[in-house]
Length: 148
Image (cartoon, rainbow, N blue to C red; front, side, top):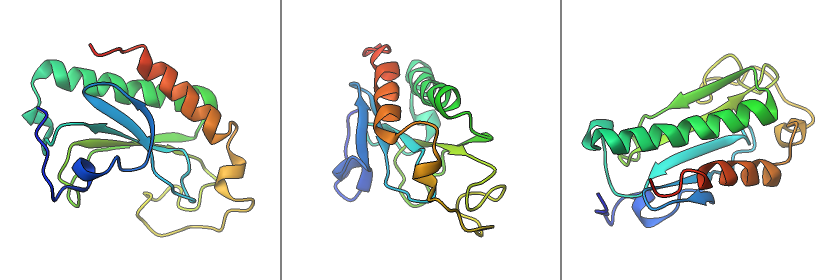
């Protein structure tokens, strides 16, 4: 499953700041001012659907999603974690892992919904841990997976 498609954004680019990478997948943090504690677990090969992966690779991918979620929950104590794998715009398997807070601009609406409030100070400043430290914790968690 190492095929790539030249027209696919996630085949051409990393899709954000790479926080961790193992042979099969990478974890990236896109730059999102409203939701700074947003990460994506991106399968490295061009696979459009979850069931295109054999069961052992699906398990590896979900273990990575769970590790990112666990770090976010422990480090930030969010109100909720949102998980999503949509792939309508970018048909390349990836999971969104988003820490949500009752103070965020859209809560309880989805991140693509209507803003409910202005957030001051900005969301990034309200996090219990800086993004670089959060990135480092996620990288360490993914590193424990090795290439299994």
